[in-house]
Length: 198
Ligand SMILES: C[S@@+](CC[C@H](N)C(=O)[O-])C[C@H]1O[C@@H](n2cnc3c(N)ncnc32)[C@H](O)[C@@H]1O
Picture 1 (cartoon, protein in one colour):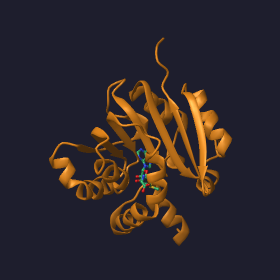
Picture 2 (cartoon, protein in one colour; picture 1 turned 90 degrees about the vertical axis):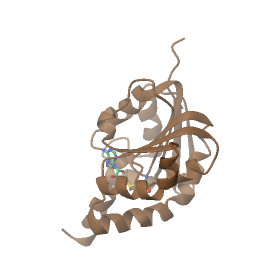
Picture 3 (cartoon, helix red, strand yellow; picture 1 turned 135 degrees about the vertical axis):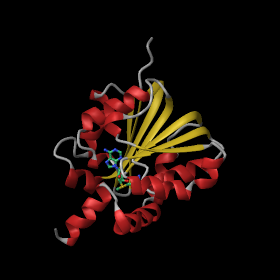
């Protein structure tokens, strides 16, 4: 495997020493995007960050007084352990909970979260429709999902739903309402709400 492919694999599922280095780099490199994405998340009780990586978004959320409980989930055990180390103080107080698991099978009951986020992760998910439906399932009615990603990475990694307008359509087809699309530098932020029953 060439070095480029190795680095791509490490972004998809960070593991080992190189994975931990990449996670640290991403914690810094994605900060601007993450702050921009979080600005769209309303203060609420329970928020979930999917593909939390090295835990920078969790830490930024924990430094505000906007959330009562912050959850992170990532498929990579190395990401979970780095995110846990980064957020140890907030885990000890019960503000942050970090779990290992896949977006395709979220270990949460229906209607659990007021908001969910994902930063630079969805283009790595193996079945994007199932993944988005899982996030929809665990949101409370009216709950908001905010997705942030660099456009060139969406185009590079995804065969379908691989441009700005298609990402918005992905939300709409998955049942989200009030879908809003914004761009910042070369990234997109898509936000939508789970429909309320009446
Ligand atoms: C490019 S990193 C981004 C990490 C972090 N959100 C950030 O902005 O720095 C992508 C993350 O998504 C995670 N990931 C990939 N596939 C996943 C899946 N199926 N379920 C949950 N997490 C996944 C990876 O393990 C990795 O930590």
